[in-house]
Length: 431
Image 1 (cartoon, rainbow, N blue to C red):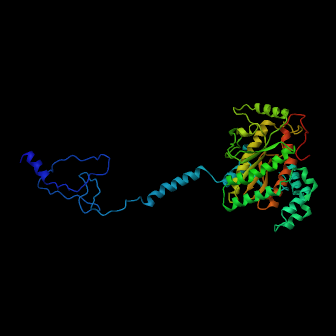
Image 2 (spheres, rainbow, N blue to C red):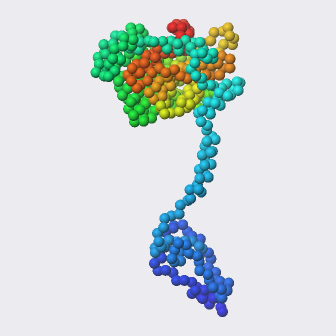
């Protein structure tokens, strides 16, 4: 038989093409096998295997095509067990790259003495590592003191007369003439609004950004602006949630952390402002700053008090780690600005402690930092409650304690940054 007859016979044996078959919907070009005659005409051609169809829906290369008369079926999905190993391995990889705040605190507390280290301590005045100056501050804050100005007693009693708490505002121990010495007392209308805003944030589970805008910043601004207007200090509230720690001042093995607000020293006096400018220009860094951050709002204004904000449900360990890291970096900057004395007989201009506020939902607390006199480890003293925003009386306690704190601790702290002979040269808590 001739070759042409063999080819013609083989082509005749192929099944006919269905009339209703549509072109494949796939736009990708398919590779096809070359057509070749069978080795022997006597060997029967075995039928191709069919998958999930009643007719022949494959080409010669084994590709499947959809059929119009085939039963519709859902697409095959990847089995969950096939994906689990990669998900688990990815999770393990992420976990190994970052540890929990508690583990990081543990790591900082166990660093060798030569590498610095830091530790969170219970605020216990019997702890011998606590500086005597900090003990004096805490004892003064514990003393019973009037939280409302005596001259406003009639206003308070009239404002709250129709409330269930009316009897509370008639307590004579709440009022005192000496209350005005630490700053003005806010009006009842302002405090009621703060309480209402705080309750709204709590009720609707708002995030810490909402708390900051609606409650914390207005209250902090009221506290310090009222003292500034009364010429009692030169402190201002600076929102700084994006202020990062300068890598030069980060503690060994500590993460980079931030705080939400800073109470900064901003003098009005020209000579004091020029002194700060000269002090900042002495910094050899490309972005000179008086603080441990190059944040523009704080470069030329020393931080006197840091404020960290958390929701009530947020981790306390996270807040501790943030303040420990932030205040530890502030200590390193103070060492650069005011080098420690070479001998014990020399006087030091450095403070005995640094202060901060920790706000968790409604609750406000004082947190302090000092350094161990022997090992120079950074210690975080946590914490001293000062008030809450659940009630108007709780807000007035916050105002009174923070104003007292500014009077006896923050103002003396700022004197470190004043030129020699400017104001009174007093140490912390000697005022």
